[in-house]
Amino acid sequence: MNAPVEANAAADLPGYMESVGRRARSAAVAMGRAATAQKNAALAAIAAGIRSASASILEANRRDVERATAAGLEAPLLDRLRLSGAAIEKMAAGVEKIVALPDPVGEVTDVRPQPSGLRIGRMRVPLGVIGIIYESRPNVTVDAAALCVKSGNATILRGGSEAIDSNRLLAQVVSHGLRAAGLPGEAVQLVESTDRAAVGLLVSMPKYVDVIVPRGGRGLIERLAAESRVPMIKHLDGNCHVYVDAAADLAQAVQVAVNAKTYRYGICGAMETLLVHADVAAVFLPQVAAELTARGVELRGCAATCALLPQAKPADEQDWFTEYLAPILAVRVVDSLDTAIAHIEHYGSHHTDAIVSRDHVAIERFLREVDSSSVMVNAPTCFADGYEYGLGAEIGISTDKLHARGPVGLEGLTSEKFVVFGSGQLRR
Image (cartoon, rainbow, N blue to C red; front, top):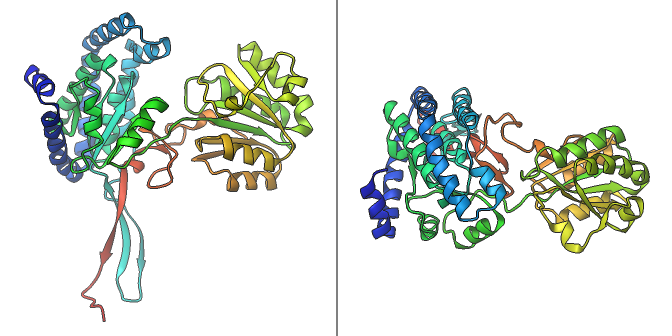
């Protein structure tokens, strides 16, 4: 965006946010009408624009990283902020993958005849205007924009102040791609102001914004959930569990547990607590502990765990609640499937939980009784991802129960309306 817009944002933030919302609402109408071919053309232009602007994007990102480093930004956030040529190519390729996904908008399903002669069905439609609030990761600017474009929505993006130069340039590339396909560039807008008050205004504009998607730490999301007057698609944290049942294939269980924890420590689908049935603990725990400690994972265990594993530190009550996002794992020996399920219900975050077992009755009970957005059987929790679920990409993961739950892809960015087909019937 240009300098006058930035100046307006600083001089009159409420007025600026009002104008952003008004433009987004207008653009959402055009996006809702857009044909699949037109949206795909915009996405193709965006991917090409990202590649052609690669050098400029890297330079903008260098400035962001330099400022963030001087400001003392934590190393994990710096890592998320930093872009490379490979990361930029991955962004462009990700947009192209969304082109290949089916367009959910306009799909009519469940058409059923009624005694009146009417046929009643459901049509999938865009949500409208989606506000996305996120920290550090410039790639979210492109990923979120592309998903919103394909699903026929307009979006207002509010990234972290540490990534402002990167986000600004990426948002410009997206807007140019939209205009190249004959769609309104205002369908994707970046909030230019780095003032935190802009976030409070964004979540308080139900007239212009239909849903908020926050992506960030627990503190940010708790604040937004308390302040927002707009519905949210969110999860607070990912305190994920793997339960190794008495009937588990222990060799498989070792592989699943190690992968669930060490695939990537910083993702919300990483295992944070390992639950092990007492019948197999004496055999299983030394095996899995050897693999985990060799990878530098610190173990914090219950009394039974510490008795079996000299390297384990005693866990306290808070450990069972903690999403570490680090090479630390809480381990508890349980006496039954019931105890494992009760532990997950009490301490978990309803994100992703897994059972390793060959007992079909235990598996069915775990699937039915564990109330999480993803429940897995003989697979690591780190698979909780829109790409791995065949959604192509995700805008986030929801642990809420209304509208969208689990990884949220294109379909999660739409809702349904009833469509009714008649031939002149009258209600008597």
